[in-house]
Length: 195
Image (cartoon, rainbow, N blue to C red; front, side, top):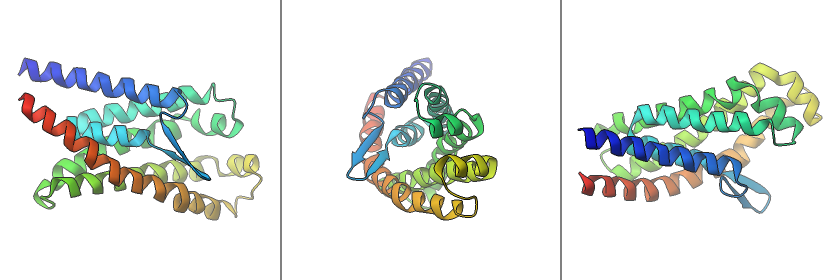
């Protein structure tokens, strides 16, 4: 039992270290594809939650959110600074996504028995949940400021935000649904062989 707890702590620390690296080192947390810049940090959070459970999912989500919060102060981008220095936008959605998707993965085992399908679905839903929560909170908490900084009107914002969901959001969700089962199944099998 003590060995298992130590293993969980070490693995959690490794996931947190990867999340911090992905947050602060260019190209480690993003995948530039043609005109899109696909975020892949959420995949690390989702995989960590699948492998380590919901508590770790919440912790890893918090680590990502807090890294986003800190990075916003040094990004040099006015929009990023305005949005992600608000902890309700930078931390809360990531915290919720990490824990809730891990919970979904573990609770759905009786409904969806094929593990890799459950992982793919968790990746897809987790990614979309993050995108929708972040954009929804931007709209609810700072629609006026965001519209002003991006040169749009508040009335145009729902369309602009929906455009982000349809371009980046869907692309990120597809990437997560492909990469999550590949990475998580390897880590789970290594973890089972250990035990």
